[in-house]
Length: 150
Ligand SMILES: [Fe+2]
Ligand SMILES: [Fe+2]
Image (cartoon, rainbow, N blue to C red; front, top):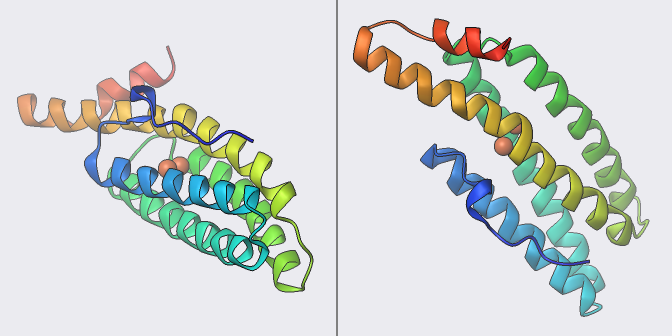
């Protein structure tokens, strides 16, 4: 499995989020390399670290989206919940002694990139616009809401 190369389309343009996303990508790449080198126990530890960090990141994002009155907050939360359920299942199986890193890597690679380029990029457009609009006009995310249903 190839590493995730950080390309410009992964940047959402919100510093706190981009820093966390980069950390997630770095953790994934370290896990991937460690697994390729056959370091089983370190792979298990890195998988746990990646899942823990990912779940904390979801909480951070949901808090940010709620505070920002993001109109698609609930949809985003559902998307996180689906990923969280699979991550917790993987975590539980790993904790019970099953080696699942080889299964987790392709799953995580796909969903991490898809979520960052998809739903995360979507909310970033709204947050950036809402921030800009608010600065310019004193009005919030109404224009962002209109764009959501274009
Ligand atoms: Fe994210
Ligand atoms: Fe997200």
